[in-house]
Amino acid sequence: MADNITWYKVDNVAKVFLATYNRRDTRSFRVCCTLKERINPEILQQAVNLSVRERSQFQVRIHKGLFWHYLEVTDKMPVVSEEVDRPCPTLYGPEVEGQLHYKVTYWNNRINLDMFHALTDGNGGMEFLNIIVQNYLKITHPGKFEEISMHSGASEDSLTEDSFKKFYDKKGKNDPSLPKAYQIHGLKLGYDQLQFFEIHMSASEVLKLAKAEGVSLTSYLGTRMMMALYENMPSLQKKKPITISMPVNLRNYYPSETSRNFFNSVYVSHVFDGTENLGDLAREYDESFKQELQPERIAARMNNYEKLEEILFIRAVPLFIKNPVVAAFSRSENSKVSAIISNIGKIQVPDVIKPYIEGYSSFCSSNVLFMTVSSYGDDLTFGVASPYRNTNILRQFVKGFTDNGMEVTLYATEIV
Image (tube, rainbow, N blue to C red; front, top):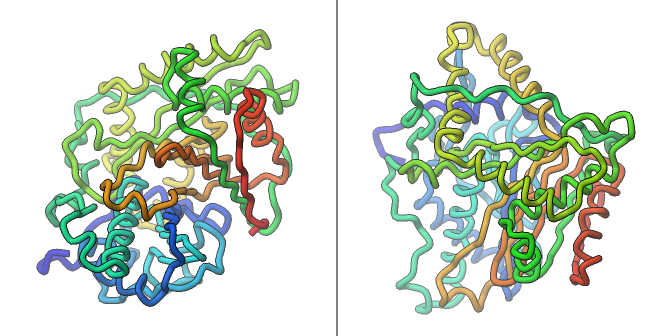
């Protein structure tokens, strides 16, 4: 953090996270890297200490002001520990008062980085994790990785930039509102619990299936999820649209190097009539997805969030009144979503590091079914967080691949 900066405002997406976190949906996410060697905790602590210098903007505490939250620089350092908590633990709130809003843990060969989503998005979290991994390998294998870097090279000002505010167009159009979508029915787990699943498939084999239908990997996976949802949809609900929400990295559309939040979501909907087949639905999904990714549509959706701060009522009232308004906005948006798929994409590391890394995975806490997707080499990994007792939707999703003769590996946590 630059020496002359001691605090700064949270971005508008962070304001939503701060107004809506709870015991089940902690608004935290996890990114993990599994190495081909057992983690040495002392060396991992050294690596984290080095990495903090490269991402010092995460060394902050979130405080409540009169009208908005703000981030204040702290000299508190993270302490590495063995994993004992659930993925995506509580990282903000009274029960963790005084702690940092991220945590580094390990288990056997795996390094876990959990982050409160108000600090950064998946892009920023993954880059921070890779900086930690790089520094860990540099210490454990002296002299082998001195010439490589997994740091973006961005300046301190660029890393802490509020890109939402920078690229917001007051004169730009807002995106039209979506109708309410089908919400998964069934009992949720007790005591605000979540269950986490990790699924592995061959990336090349799944991509081959997507190409056979003439669609992108993201569209193919979204179609498979839609069909799994429809198979478990009560008859009386089948006139409602099934809507998949997909977070999009706005750095692909605007010249930003920020490590703060800079994403928004696009949506694909379909009302089933019972005659759909995989190929036709996949092509319809792909066409809708491409339309959603048009720059003018992306800009309109970004404006929706920034308009929050432009509303006089939102700006002028105290935080204790404002938070329920923001929470109501978030609930309204959530009612338009059936499930979320976040495709982090292909994770790239320098060639010299590849022999030391087994793979990556990621998860995000949620009150709905949330699936993250990433690939490393030929390993396509799905990290699923579910608040539901019933696992039929996930079983149906996986069955769509095993029926094609694919080998699928699935791990599940205890209910936590």
